[in-house]
Length: 75
Image (cartoon, rainbow, N blue to C red; front, side, top):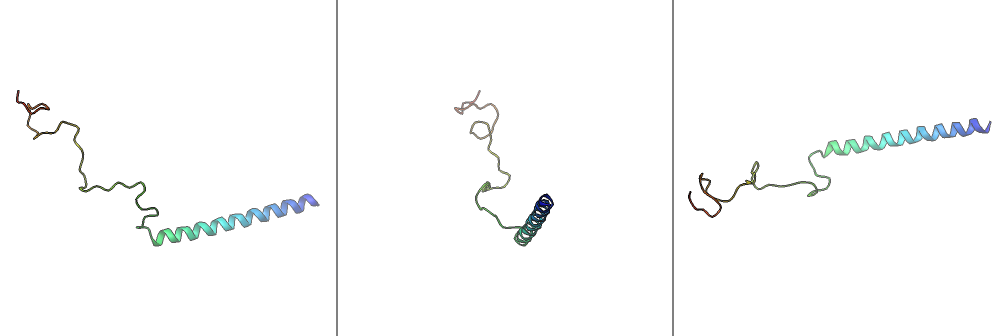
């Protein structure tokens, strides 16, 4: 008899936990849905660029004309 009561209490506790987690997830989803354009932690994991699509060139600095080496001398 004690085993049946223990199993029943365990099942009720599991059902209560499932209901509580489901309710908390629903509240969290409503909050996210209301503010889906805001940052949860602003500035973390974000890289802001001054010019979109700007990429750093891997080559040497210069005016980009062919035949120029690093010192700027023509060949």
